[in-house]
Amino acid sequence: MSNIFLTRKCNLKCPYCFADEFVNKNNEEITLENFKKAVEFIKTGDSKIGLIGGEPMLHPLFSEFLDMLISDDKIDSVIVFTNGLRIDKYINKLKHKKIHLLINCNSIKDIGEKNYEKLKYNLTILKNNDNVNIGINIYSKDMDYSYIFELLNIADKHFLRYATALPNISKEKTYDVLNSFLKIKPLLMKFFSDCLKNYIVPVTDCNTIPDCLLNIEDKRLMIKLNQLAMKYNEKFITGYTCEPIIDILPDLNAVRCFGLSKYMKASIEEHKNMENLRNYFINQIDLYARLSFVSKGCNDCKMRMLNRCGLCFTYKMKQCEKLKDYILDNSEVIDEVFKDKVTYTTLVSKDILDKLHNYNYKIIDNIYIEKRI
Image 1 (cartoon, helix red, strand yellow):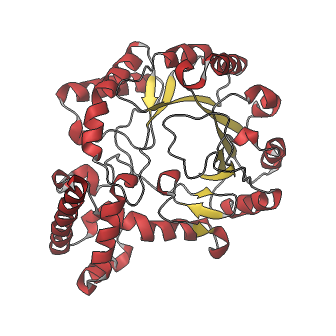
Image 2 (cartoon, one colour):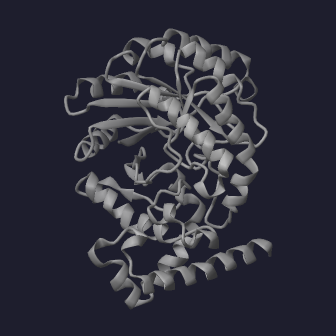
Image 3 (cartoon, rainbow, N blue to C red):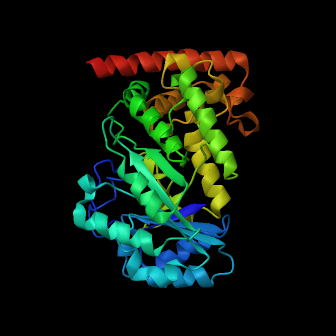
């Protein structure tokens, strides 16, 4: 699936928002012409389209966009990523079998009582709709997430899409990701435990706690969540393979995903199809990110080598850029890393992998020295 960014406008100011490069900076919206171009480009490789923002339902042509996608036989499904506050305005079209909703739900503290009551009402009118999913962002080690169980009950849902909110990282900043996860881990484990008590299966597709930080008790909890998930013919996943999503912006520039939007953009008009664009980002970002790691302890991690660590690439882009420079400056490494379009560390020879690991150690040391300074 690929996403189309409809508007920079949002009717909320969530404290954890990592899309700060885009949201509420100005009123830029995608034009009808560019929307059509984005749809046609996505159709060269996908039959599913996501609509994102900002708040996508704030776009004045949102209803028209839905009509276009619903009537397009080459589009199988449309996912609208929304905060849920304007659902009642478009309720009839949103109930179409082709339309799916991922509603990111926030607390009274974050959005105010009036908006929270509106959210509850909109979840009520969507009850019994199988195309609706509820989401939550875990963004603070002391946040109160208890409200989400009330909302899940209103919507009559047993699945909850959770995300550990990304930090706002720029190229100039560094971030101790493992230490950050250790700080938020107690809350995450309590959150998982409370989900289990409420017969809720938490699922994620981005930036989950890495396996190396889980102890025996944590893993037992994960097994119990998997057992619950199996009752609903689903699976609770702790690690996953990160692949380019592709978000197309109003000006038809594309980013690999929102988390990496500050690092690289590419115009869809310079690529012949979706596969070509995805391969571009894989060769420019994923290849180096998969060979990089955030800690010396990541060296022999099988989950990292299989690209199933769970950590967002955003955390290691500084290491990634330095490793990329090192590889491109060493012809021997280039020949090995790029033969047969290698993208996984397990396909690189041990000698070359050792050189990359040793260089990564230097990168990590330098980053933490820079951070201490």
